[in-house]
Image 1 (spheres, one colour):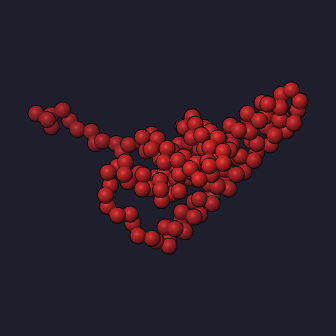
Image 2 (cartoon, rainbow, N blue to C red):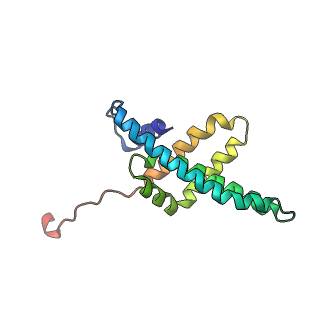
Length: 156
C-alpha cells in the first residue's frame, strides 16, 4: 500500500518524474521504521482493547465494550492507512504526533475500513480505498513549507 500512497501523492502534486529506483538501504530503513511503528501500535491497541473486552463480558453494559473495541480497532486501522503517507515525511515520533492531532481522520478512515472488511467483498477493496482516502486527506493536512518573508518595499 505504500507504493500506492506514493503514486497518489505524486499525482496530487503533479509530479511526473519517475520514482527513485529501488535501494536496499532505503528498503531496510523503511522496514525497520514499519516494524517499530507496527509493534508500538499493536502494544497500545492490545492495552486499550483489554478493558473494553472485559467490559463487554458484563451483562447490561456489554454493548459499551463492543463500541469501545470498534473505536480502538478503527483508530489503529486508520493510523496504519495514514502512516503510508507519513513514512515519507516524518520520523516515528512525529508521525504519532500528527495522528494524535488528527484523531478524527484516523477514526473516520479506520471506521470505513473496518466496516468494509466486515463485508465479504471488502477484503478486496478496503485496503486500497482506505490508503487512497488517507493519502488525499493527509497531504492536505501536512504542514506546508514556510514561505520566506519578504519586505513590502521589494514590490515597489
